[in-house]
Image 1 (cartoon, helix red, strand yellow):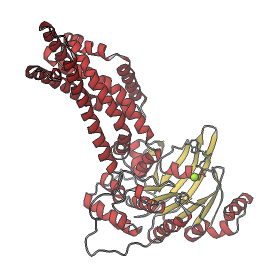
Image 2 (tube, each protein chain N blue to C red):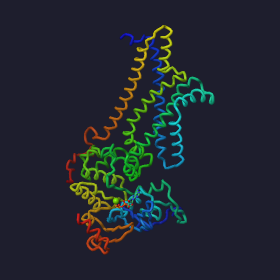
Image 3 (tube, protein in one colour):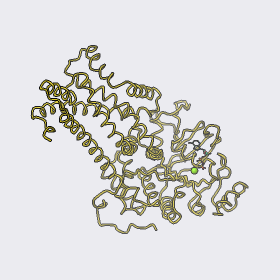
Length: 274
Length: 246
Ligand SMILES: Nc1ncnc2c1ncn2[C@@H]1O[C@H](COP(=O)(O)OP(=O)(O)O)[C@@H](O)[C@H]1O
Ligand SMILES: [Mg+2]
């Protein structure tokens, strides 16, 4: 054994390939006086599909953004696949704030799909997907192209490879965005209300792509969604979120069919009314 | 009518001036673009010192009149650093380029800020480096917003080049006053022909600048629509049964 080997990690924390565990410990985030995450503890097992539900403004997006490093938490720790996201560990196990390089290295395990797609409008669908494989993963153009076309085919858009986002429907854009994120082969994928900006008739095609990912891959998935039918179908676990904390945590059956908390009942009642 | 046509010798003189004007324009444009891009980006740095330096430069470049800058460059700098007189053309370009950079940096900064935040966030999610985010995602989109005001700025620089005649560079404007002196010596009082000609020359240069920027804008706009040519394929037999979703 080399003496400077990394800390041994619990076997369950890291899987060989494809999935990683996510752990939030006492994560705190406020915008001014508005406390959005209150000492949040959250455990997601490797390969688990967790759906986060909750009223608007309860901090669901903020959880994903903090994990994607789009917002810095004010306190607490986050690990992905056993590695600290915002801290570097000293030999003695002490934590100090991580540098940009460390954050970047852990971030490579995480991917995110946004509510408003955020596709690059000056690139074709294929170019959008090829960017990270070429620039970040050092793949050759032709390798990246083959990967891009394979992913476009997977999301049913092979014939739109040369089209730019401006020429695609909302559902098509979101499927390209999903393919773009898949191209980086993240161990943890975050989906923030990826169907709520879509016309109702386009929701189905995006959900069906998500279902495929959930079925095939071993990727850990955190999904914020108001699509309760879909949640029941793909989720291993549903978290009801309210005022920056987990109000209820259980199987889809438990939370969606038989909620214990009054606020969960109210929320589900309001969602199902629509 | 024929008073509007100058003599061959006079055109030859104007050509010499034109060459100087275009050189000053070219060098100061080049410097101005480099300064605009780098200082514009620096203005948005997360590092306070970098931001501060950029702000000081912008305020200086915009606050000092370009004539004063020109005189400093032409007379103070050569004495201080012992430059040759011959580099006066470059020093003049330096003055105008520094001036342009101050305005250009603010255009670049504003244009970068106008690119939706989601674009940067998506490129962070893809784990691009800060430089790659700028290079591949933000600047190509900002460029669309940058180009029109940069065209105007370049024409401002063209007009500004006339100032270099004040430090005895023989640009177009300087040649015009030389020709005028000669005309006066020959008792020619009508200045219409001379000035119509020089007006036309400046006008044509300005139109060329406009045209170049229009072309650049159009080339950029093409990036936002379908790529021409056949669909790329994976090779192997065409797998046409792709349209799965509804
Ligand atoms: N960048 C920000 N600046 C200030 N307040 C913010 C910011 N982002 C989110 N918030 C606030 O944080 C709270 C939680 O927001 P969010 O995580 O988007 O909730 P959700 O996704 O559950 O609707 C809201 O009150 C929102 O106004
Ligand atoms: Mg949200």
